[in-house]
Length: 161
Image 1 (cartoon, rainbow, N blue to C red):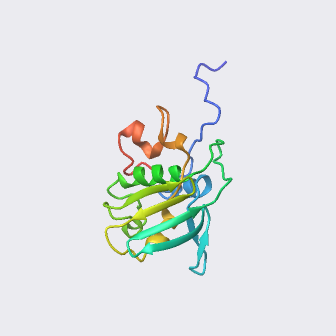
Image 2 (cartoon, rainbow, N blue to C red):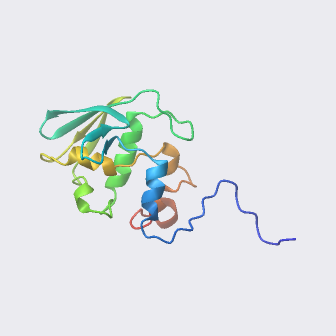
Image 3 (cartoon, rainbow, N blue to C red):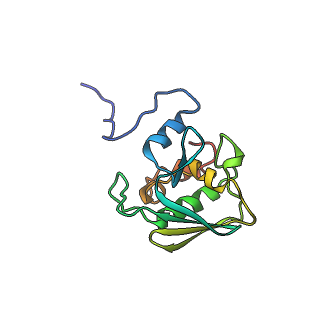
């Protein structure tokens, strides 16, 4: 008979020693507003379309009827929450700072399926940056047991992906 405590059901144990294992986790558990295909073309994922109302504002129309794995309906509020959380980091994208949005950038919820990103200046890479902008459900960020890339455990998401 074992005297060790039982392992909670549903716990993910990381056995991949690769420093890039976080990429495979996010790519397989989160979605992005926009993806880029192997030929460098824009492919919409959570977004249905993207428009530029002016040179400093990117507006996304989001898909309807999408749900996260935990059943939560996907809305523009999820995009804003994830954007605001990621903007707290000094360097949210280890593969390259070109994926980071300027710190002065703001996400504005227009309605449940429309979000606007306001940038401090023109950003020709903004659509491409959406490829590195992973969207998680509210449960990922909120609550005492939320992983949130380490915020609750370490007080920061820096380097804990």
